[in-house]
Image 1 (tube, rainbow, N blue to C red):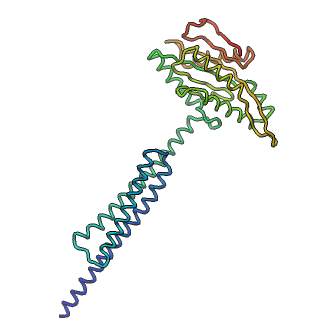
Image 2: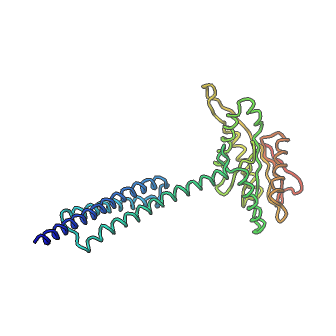
Image 3: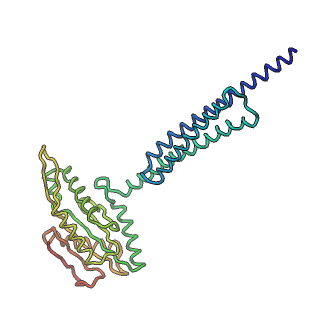
Amino acid sequence: MFSLSLGSRIDQLLSLYVIDIMNTLLFLAALLLMIALLFVRKLAKELPKGRTRNWWKILGGLIVLFICGYFSFYLMKLGTQYSSSEMLVPVIFFFGAIFVLLVCVLAYRTTCELKRIFVLEQESITDPLTGIFNRRHLDRRLQEEVLRCHRYNLLLAVLLVDIDHFKKVNDTWGHQVGDLVLKHVSRIFVEVLRQTDMVARFGGEEFVILLPHTPETESYSLAERLRKTVESTPLQFMSDGTLTEIRVTISIGSACLLPESDSAFDLLERADKAMYRAKHDGRNRVVRCPGHSPVQPGRYQHEGR
């Protein structure tokens, strides 16, 4: 009789112990899903608005449903014993929650790492002051464009732009205003240029603009539009509490790629000579050096305002 009573007591304690373990697994699984839900929300904030972000929000909603399901199963089994088959359910729930958490954590960390890499890549090709491309990226892109144009017999025009009397701006207003002028002119370039064009800061107050698939006449028209827009758009800034306005002008040298002969260096050199001719002739003008187009070959052609 005593042995039967002891055996029954042991079975009862084991049953209670199993129930405690199963309930603990359920609570841990629900806790892991709550942590996963936090990572899903953090991930959604890192993503731009769009379909991918919406899908992660939907996944967050499904995780909430899973959490509710876990607690529903716990309430359903409250005060009852687990059969051998039912004991698998909390175990599956627990390892399933671990899997969901790992996926969410890895997705969040991968997204943050990709964003960090993207920022580093952008910083390596972007001028920190103006936000446009820098000289390093320009050199690489120009080489690629020249090779592609020679291979497929395509058109390419280059504009070399210099801000007139920029040293005088720095000497008169200071380098901070000079930086504002550089940003101001860069914004105008970005607004006026086409999506297929590329503008980069060449150094100091000089800029280079690549115009793929652009004949000489069209590149000249675009250069004139840039010149007139810069001339007619003043820079406004606060100086000693007073709204101050200054106007700047630009000189532009234009050159087109010569078929089967020009290198990237030759193309830039011809655009540079045309730009210095523009400054020599009075500034605030566009000078073009004929390329492949049959427009007065063999000499520079300059145009006034």
